[in-house]
Length: 448
View 1 (cartoon, one colour):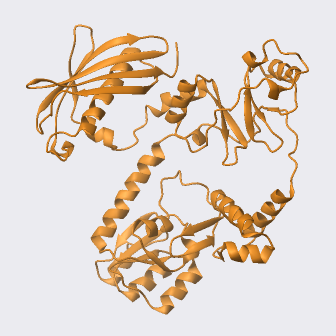
View 2: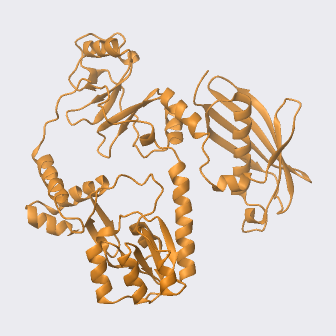
View 3: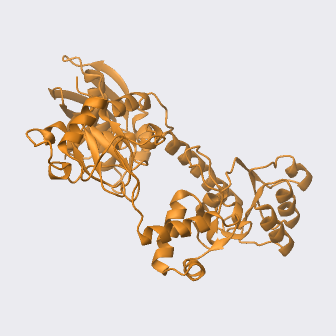
């Protein structure tokens, strides 16, 4: 990679000094913008930006009713586990003690609806006891390295709060009853499981080594030397701080003088993405923009990595084999099955409209019908083309309402299939005939 060290200005030095100070604080230390500014003799604006950077990097956590607290550096939430802090937010709870442990992972929760000795058998490290105003149970849970969630708006005694602070295990109070709280946490755990299965760009790229790039001030001759050395034809162009400011391709370099600066020829503004972007969304962006290389940048647009169209295609093929859990689309599509093939060898899908699909008028909602037609169109393209694709647009015509409990047929007709795109016409029929019609257009991700 052709890159030199980036110069540091005075603001950057102050910023880094604040970050180093935060890193050196004891876990559990409370922080504020005003105290940082006063302690380090910087403006509150500089302290605020540094505190946000520290939160993004995982060194501090900000929670409602708690404030900002120094925590152990997070390694990301892609393990699918909720933290005690997540639970506090979900149940709108107030943290009574043990704030330094809000970012500890929660492995299971135990409902304290039994005798104390029996309850203790189920409590272990990393669990959360959900219980009412039973102070002895609060204390025993903390002694067994578990957090405590007190329902009904009750509190606890000062000794328990002091023990929570000493052990770094949160004691949280909320106004909801035990059943409601358990339901809320269980739903959040399931949602986190689905989220964990969604493949992100950070799951398929590595930032261990610096990606190949050109710098502002380098020339077309430098571009050709880098191309010859690596065999690649596309490179991000970065400024003195490592921020992506353009893209340099063979087309940009065509006809240029060897000594001409790359910034005179590069394509701008560059299309970039953040590590947290889903792979499917990145595929859609690359397809729509017509690009083959996507720079991955941080929140300051500094270059972290690059991902190619072939990287995205392989990831999409793998992601298609995963089972992310029961999503809304899964629920809508679960009652449909392929019944037969048309004369053009296209699948016809048959299913029943369930009460959960009802809209305000008591008939099947327009959103559900649109989702059904889109899912059927995607399934049809997948079966015919057997290639990755993203839906670009869906035009829908609602002929008449569809009744709940009606059996319907989804009937496709292929209008166009090319190397780069596909168009499918979908019709939804019930016992009275045509009810909804749609035209779906899709872009292929991996051209033949």
